[in-house]
Image (cartoon, rainbow, N blue to C red):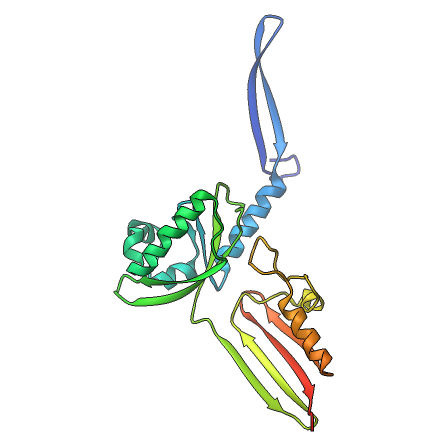
Length: 239
């Protein structure tokens, strides 16, 4: 607590020292307030995410799951979730794949950035989920990584015939992006998410832009974090 009444996080460390034959103590104070606030904001963003988020250990065990992730797996709280052995939460095929991923984590061998799993909920329902790996170094500490879990992934493709143009629309319910960075979306090697968050090389939409513009059209996008994104392009009629 500071004199003005505000609170700050500090880290205290001490050591015993001997000066002129007498023992004393040396205390070091380090300001960690910015780091703690960043951790709190990070945790809050996970808690409030409309997408399922898990933090898993090196062994693939869940050390954190937000409300949406627990809902997808069919549990009301993480204590109930952790009481059920991992083997019983997966179908046989998905559990075998889980064991392979766990062994690769231990060996330091790369595993896919996204994959599908089939789980068995407490009521016996089998549900198929899509998993995206992110946060290969977690602010929560330790050798942990994050997983975004979602069900019913959707990609919608539509076409609209206009007077002089044809408009194509591709829409998904993925991670989305912040519209503040929309101008970078179609630039080569520019990504709306860091390489440590989601896999990718930042060339897909740039290639789309070149193809569309080569045919005299234009392309643009619109998105919202954790909701999805929509790309539209217009091409002139060839006739």
